[in-house]
Length: 345
Image (cartoon, rainbow, N blue to C red):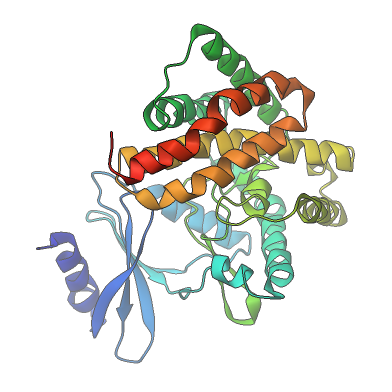
């Protein structure tokens, strides 16, 4: 089957840029229309080539955010060449070792999380001024994300029709979560700062990818993306230890305005923005299957739902929402996943 864009991309790297690539092969694809290829050069080095079809993907945000993060000392891929018209970007190759498999190896998690939190501190402190150049993570953006859950997770995946009382409960919960998010200090937010978007570099340095959707938003957001990762989980006590270690980092670097008035307040911020994020992710993962045919994310729905349940149960304001989840939602997920895998609409 012909792949016209791959042919154009290969010709761009090999001939148009004069690099004489010996071969170009698939590196990865993400949850959008973007694809990534690895080009091997005659001198033995390699480059990564982003394919972002202009009709579906605007490379402008990627280029802008890469520049802002680079300025803050964050290791993002160096941009070697750009073809805006065709949506091609030639990038530094950060290798093929994401955090996720490394975190599962004995003794590696403490080292990698320490490095990732150091990098996050740079994003939140050294890129703080740059956050002003980003769109805000405002009430409208937060609401759009939350509404993915009743539409795609409840309606499409679980196949339930929400009653008026349920809709009212969800609306009250969403409004409250939005208010809590907007009350947090505002920083530069990557928005997907987790184990699949962090690369292990030599000497355990951290490479950061997939940052093009960055916004200026809540200080707890990237922290919860990292420590309550939808692809790997840790005991609550360890998560809390790392959250408070990050707060200490912020204080030691003079960013007391980002650290909250106490450990308790900082943990509350972490938990509540986590509820917002993971409600959103339930909708996104369901949509990735039902709209885009990407079944792999179905396996991540149970952990994501568990994160919502656990964090919400820690806050009395969400008691009614938690009760609804336990009675109405939790019993349906296993059957819905099985139905989806069997291809039943």
